[in-house]
Image (cartoon, rainbow, N blue to C red):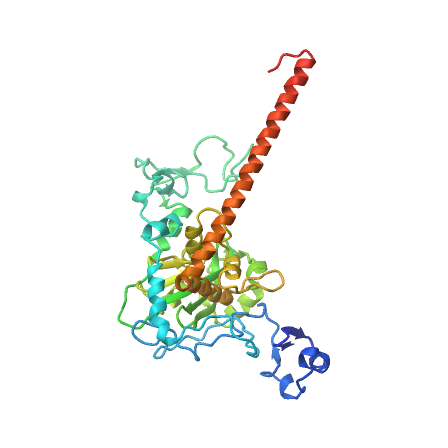
Length: 444
């Protein structure tokens, strides 16, 4: 167990260390160190040692019980019973400072949504940014040769198959053993040593993955969120180097209330945990899974998200194509904070979430050792960036002008450096030719 002092954002191993801190620290000099302060809920908050850094997104923001999410027909969640799932630990702390996150007055909810709708990206823009906006059809792909089915055993293309039998080696080829590459037979020539009737045609991995994509369900008449901010944290799994979601967070765009904040247990074994980026360890994930408190893979996460959205919901995110791809979702109403910034600036410019937060709403995120991502903080930060771009248009345009001027200056410097390098190469070439002529060797 560790003891947490919220005003100072410090951890202490023992209660005595916290008591000494409260007595001697200048921050608490005008505060009487009563017994209440050292108990859970006071200034000293006792907590379990967690895999997560102090959750900046949760320390000063209303919980779902305090602020309802904004829906098109009713407040979401009043008549819905949520499944008890593991929620990543959040240090609520003591709310002594003003919230960094924007609270939109109820009278401005509709105008905020209207501004958001006007900034939704077209299908052409989404496709150019690698979003999947329609079901994947092999016949529509430009490279049909790489998308056609092949036999899993003999690698024969379905298009070139003419009803021949399937001849193959049952064992895998060992390329390092030249004399006997296949353990199943001593032969090194020929297509294989085993023949069966018929082939086992399958789609290649890069295509079969797209067969899992599904379009967001149409409206079923129930109240769903009008706009949701989404983010996932990933871990590499066997057969998918890009990664599968292990943590999914979603908040209501208008109210900021938390909709989802759950661990996800991948269906495939994890081979790259990537804890240095998101702070989640295998032990934490397995402990939650052993208690039955995780969502069942990307399918479970997608199903849980679909309880709160439909095809009319606007999904917001930063590099949202990665999150939608991880959840195998096809969605056409999207606002991406990175696209908003980059399309306004043009080429170049820092469009990372951390850079945009610092430059636009002037909110600092990931201020922890190692800059570990906090999933809930990231969705709140993305919301701040999109609110700034859509509601403070004059300030956003002013920022764009500054960024464009900076990019023009940098491009001018790069062009100057390229010219200097070319001139230097020309001088070196001329010098070499003169030395060659001086030695009596004809130039090349």
